[in-house]
Image 1 (tube, helix red, strand yellow):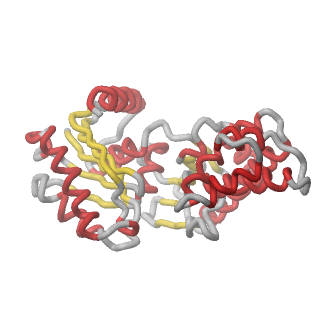
Image 2: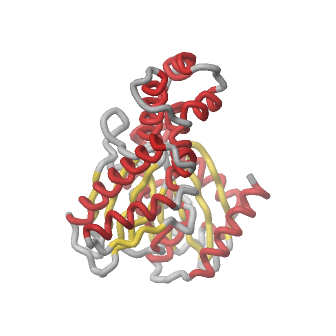
Image 3: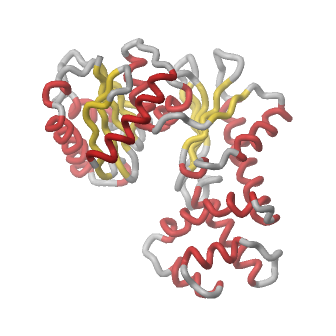
Length: 329
């Protein structure tokens, strides 16, 4: 059985054709496909271009697709599901099941293999979303970097810079973050950072990447960095707890998938969140996803076909995804 999976975001868009054994028959990566951040014609052209390239790779298999699952940022906000579905149906058989969902759902499925739960996303931005057995969806946070997105890479980067400048002024304790940030921007002293931050068109793009350093420095015992990490974990937990309390759940232990670049290679966050949930006696299981988000879209497609995938699929898909990427991209 073949399925088509699409992961559409604000930075890049990926599509794969895959079977239940994790074998990938076609894979295409292209630019962003968030309709809230681009012109409608450009958005449609991106989806067409994605599927045309996939059609060139797999002309016969694409028409044999059983189901398609697309997790796309901004599509539901713009109510563009119908537009996306109509484009997809120009390339697949009329009997193909096509489902368009929020990209947060495929991030959840990448960790739960299609089960209900909560997903906490923290990349450049941050958002918390819950999907339960009653097909209810609940969103908490993620209202933009100017006043929300707490715990995002940008939010962490802001706190890192605050610590560096306040330490420089002797308004706060010295921190190892200063040396790390100076090295990152290749400057000799703190005042020189201003030009590198305010001198770019979109400061957010240069601030968000430095958020990752706070975890490295915290692990080495830096008191300021440790406090920033602890505060971030409280922010995540507050949003997760709010989402949990606003929904009914059909299982005792609710999985909470931690997705996004902020959580990559930061297992200490899991233990912080586990301690907070334990103190409140809330039945949450915090997990890092085993699959890429596009893998979660594959899981969603097979869920539509009532096919339950197992651990062997995870291992095969990840291996084939990396192999295809190295050989074809």
